[in-house]
Length: 127
Image 1 (spheres, rainbow, N blue to C red):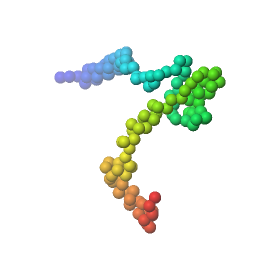
Image 2 (image 1 turned 135 degrees about the vertical axis):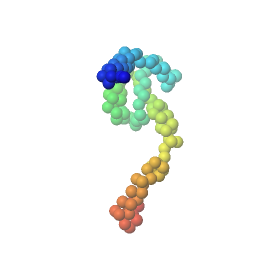
Image 3 (image 1 turned 45 degrees about the vertical axis):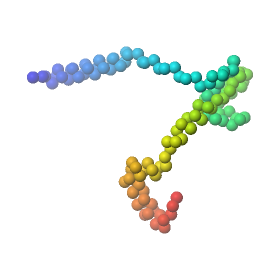
Image 4 (image 1 turned 120 degrees about the horizontal axis):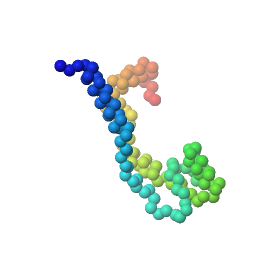
């Protein structure tokens, strides 16, 4: 018959060995990311950031800092927002209306909202 103490020691040692294995195992090498722009200009810094106004720096503090430093030191730079515009087009077809999500996943919540709406707005006020 097994002793509970030996089982406990085996579980603790197994946990320690599993933790140390994860701790000392090197991370897998990630694949190289695809180059966003193929036609580079020589000695030009490309800033990948959200779209901005023509004469105004980006409102993100880090983007603004880099862009202002490039202007002060006369470093040629270009702001490129193609990555973020592609992201917006990729996710657009999957947008759904919130009532569709509520009807499918949370029917009880939708019933509760309708009941509270009738109590709070008895004159059938729609918002």
